[in-house]
Length: 454
Image 1: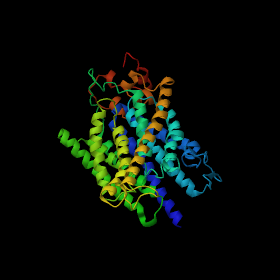
Image 2: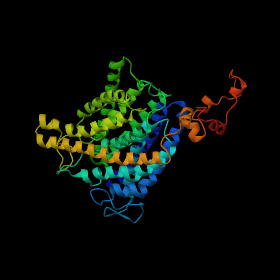
Image 3: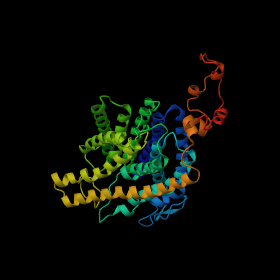
Image 4: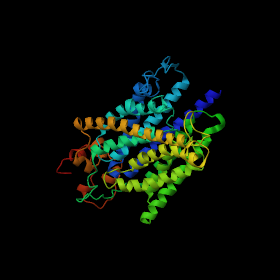
């Protein structure tokens, strides 16, 4: 009964994590212009589907299939009466496999925030296969599957729910794509100064943030994998405290800088706080959670503004998931409580300085956390940059200028996300000449996408 109750909780948490796909969809659509709104829906659905098959066929086996320190060697094409890591597949195994898929899909969704409004749809398909089958599973195996980072000099990396495994992995993939993709047309002026390209709907951004926020309770809380002593309650409270502090930190920072509370920055503050607490959620006391979230919220504001001067990241993914993911991973080495640490791990530096913990052991754990950051960055960046380079040299990574100007909705999908904004309806009085007011079929519109028209 206890085992079944545990799996019911994991199932509920899994559903919440799957719901985060809707959060990413609304967030990215809101930060896009109207002409690129519909493509966000297709991207989420196709990536979620491809990631599922890749994880089932290959990814789960590499991540959780036992094997060696580099990759697992069982569990491929997951099926009944199969042995995975020496254990026979059961319903519980299937539930944990599905929960792992939810994490993999979230990490993949992070990748595309930097690529909005200019990437070819085919690039999603190819990279999703590589990511779901190889990239994410290698990192997950290293930390959670008994791989390289599960024992470094006798100390394990502590990443409770994935500040590095999930969020830094997605952000590094995003960086690799962005470096080869380049900025949106018109993002930088002749002198290289960034121009603001506002998204079309801050309400959608807000909805996306709230959905992600709710989903995070499954993300962190479900990573307890059990209901014993209701420990998931501690984890979920830490999650909420950090998220709230992230909003406050980002809002204060952006207000002091520009005398206005920027809506997008407040949203990214929530995301940064949530990312920052993802690794420490099960390892820190309540008092540390708002500190971790506050630092993440302040960090994301200055990081977004600094990064925008050099590369075009429309949603701030490099900051909110990348830098906040690094901070969250390191924060474990600073604030991890002796009461909550993993077996063999060291307490946080805080307890070495102000408590009874060994200072050398604490700094050793902080070093181990830093190695996790370096390992994740190196593995993900090398495979991702190679994959995107191959895509660029074969099918191409970026849409032509004319298609980018027209918008990916019509050029890639043959329809608009907001048809009434682009195709005036003759039954309504528009006050425009008939030639302008007449509806334009998507196919006809797509046919006009020539360099001259662009």
